[in-house]
Amino acid sequence: MLLSLRPDADDAQLAALRALADEGGFELRFLDERRRVAELVGARGPHLRSRLEDLKVVREILDPGQARELHERNGRPDTVVRIGDAVLGGGHASLIAGPCAVESRDRLLEIAHAAHRAGATVLRGGAFKPRTSPHSFQGLGAEGLLLLEEAREATGLAILTEVLDPRDVELVGRSADAFQIGARSMANAALLREVGLAGKPVLLKRGLAATVREFCLAAEYVLDAGNDQVILCERGVRGFDRVTRNLLDLGAVAHLKGATHLPVIVDPSHAAGRADLVPALARAGLAAGADGLIIEAHPRPDEARSDAPQAVSLDDLAQIAADARAILALDGRILAAPRRELVGKGV
Ligand code: PEP
Ligand code: MN
Image (cartoon, rainbow, N blue to C red; front, side, top):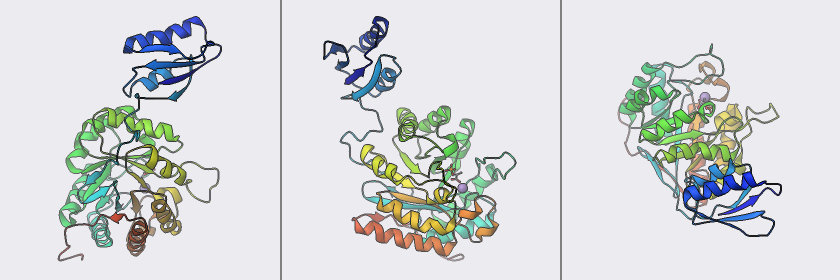
């Protein structure tokens, strides 16, 4: 590992560096007379980088060498994450769709059947909603989880739903096939550790104003807990222009595909905040290399109890799925299809 050191470092700061090297059993060598570049020989393992960055003497890690963090690509093939019939990574992409919030049994089943018909493999609906205002609709809670289970029974779609509180991980995990960690929770270390221990895939959304590094380190918490089933979700970051709700960072999507081994998906709904822009951003996300999409859809978008302006109609959802298949085919990738045929009512 190569380190750039501060030119004004004093003896105490250098001693702190030496103590950390000794603690890890590494040899510390200075590569120039002025002690501005150092090498830690024998340094391995993901834990060292953050510890070194906390030292005053370290200006920058020039090359982590063998001490790569767990999310880093480092020559690894894609990690492939499966949630029911959904496959993400390794040339496979998946469509995740559903309402922002679980609102009622009939409405959820109607959306689930339409999502299945469109070719989605995962139904996403919020039972516990992270609303900006405590006065807004907070979701149906435990009752919403039971409705999601019923929708899975009816369609065969896997269930993805958000968990907001570390104390609810067990409850949500009894119903969900995968956990969503929302943008507002991205930096909740206790929650990240808890879902890391729960042994189910985790869809991690980028924080509202999180850097790519902060996003990766949030994923690192889950990986460090022993769970490598992490999907990164770019959902737009705060921009300066209110014409869209957020600014979809497609550069980050392309970057993360190369820099990490984890699947990356795009959420055009929360990025745009406007249903009319969702199809274009969905196509752009896949063209940038995303391994899937998460789309908010509703049979009567005007009546949605949360995020109504961005909910696409069920017909638009089917068109987004058709576009996705076409774009993925351009670079030899495929959209995972639901295996179960729908029979009877609702088809
Ligand atoms: C959501 O998925 O409905 C949601 C609240 O998204 P985000 O956490 O990205 O704001
Ligand atoms: Mn939403």
